[in-house]
Amino acid sequence: MHFKSAAFIQDIHNNDHMIRIGYHISTSGARDLAFDRAASIGCNTMQIFLSNPRSWSVSKASIDEQAAFKTKEKNSNIKPVIAHMPYLPNVASSDNIKRTKSIECLKKTALLCDQLGIEYLVTHLGSHMGAGKSKGIKNAISTINELDCKVCILLENEAGQKNSIGSDLHDMAEILEALSIKNKGFCLDTCHAFAAGYDIREASTAAEIGKILDFDRIKVLHLNDALYDVGSHKDRHENFGMGFIGLDGFRQFFKEKKLLTKPMIMETPGRVDISMEDELNEVKLFLERAIYN
Ligand SMILES: [Zn+2]
Image 1 (cartoon, rainbow, N blue to C red):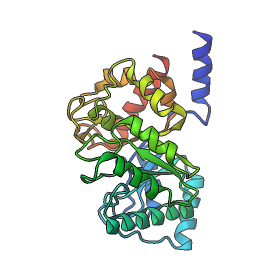
Image 2: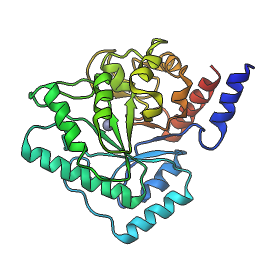
Image 3: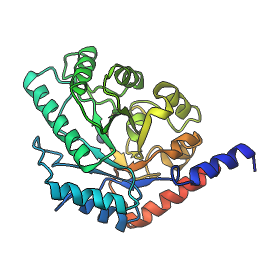
Image 4: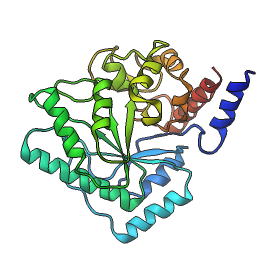
């Protein structure tokens, strides 16, 4: 075996760099229950919502709840924990009322992350709603810059639905650069990138993405296949390997080995033929093989 790849494999197998993969997990009942649910299906990372994703309200965490969450995190192998913003806030909005509500929701969610010891908070960049892309980008930057938090804010790329900000990865890089908050990075969604026109089935595309975003700044992957073909601009996820990206497409993507060191979250409909646990094992095996490809 090539010396360099042997060193890489050693690196990826040490505790910091083993393959980290999980699902978006329900917090129904109590936020800390997500750890039990994630562990029961074999996840070693997870993503959660901290509040109802279809509501503006963010309920607080009592001191007891904060302690319970942190204790479970400490005693589990679910690392990192990734929170995802609810759907209603639109950081790019030019509407003052909506923008004020979005800032409030973002601040409350970031505060919760800090109280619960959560490492990453994923946010979309929203929609300019017809005001134009450059206005939307300006709004998004000033909205996120209102934050004062410890949690690392991750900007997620978009599929390119009408008026959305963040499907062009160059825009994403520009926005991240302009953010004055210290702790920041990207969450790269493979389905969204593909829908936006980045054909990750091609051998050169992953490297191209790394050049635009900087691999070190990509902190999390949303490992979703796509229900529609490249450039569809449709945000419709398919189970890993079963969509238009497919296993061969992901094989090409993961030839860029740095991507294998990122925590990966599947936000997919779920297989009907096998359990989540079995699916996770299959995907893990695929990724472990990709180390040697
Ligand atoms: Zn998302």
